[in-house]
Length: 243
Image (cartoon, rainbow, N blue to C red; front, top):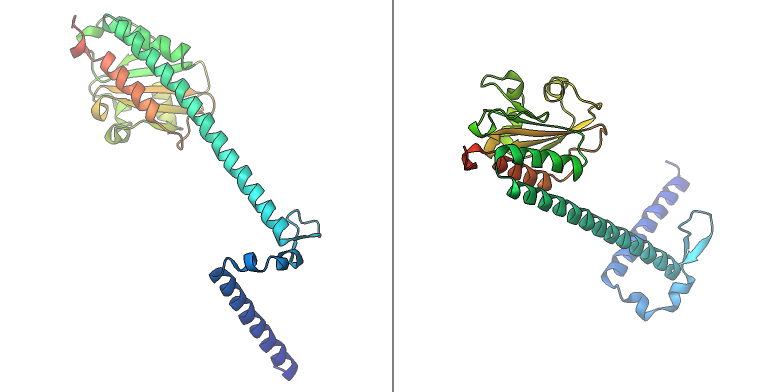
């Protein structure tokens, strides 16, 4: 390395050290510019919009604060919208519960579930798969109801869902889609799977959407779990006085 290069290198290192000391000093004395306010108007920074112009430090701080306010307003708007959406869902679940309360037998309660899913939740394709045929459901015929045989291989493909005991949303394997919706009127893009009963003891509720992102793995499943609890209780033959 030439002598000049060594000199330049030493200057750069010294400059970096000086900058580090300045930064450390300012971090340790956040009130420095309160005591030296005149310095603010002399400091110039590249403009946030990147057009080559410069702004004072005060103007830069104002821009930063404005951006933070915009971000806070956006977060607040999102929270309000989510709150309103949750209120709507809660009201729909309340209506489902009211329908089930008025259902005097399993047949009427099944009809109430079907009507609620179609009318309140806008579900076009859904199916309730039960592990066993309860006496209360003997003779009940419904497009949305399927009774699985004890050795049903298709239902066994959902054992991980039953083990979790929690609803799951997203895409399903082709074999699972064909098992749940063999004659669907829509192209199945995504599915909500809801275990019925503890560990899926009664079976499952599956709701399909043509939109691949409608039921996505990141969405909250709290309301789906509540729907599953109501459906499981409504179709539990042991709770049917006529069973």
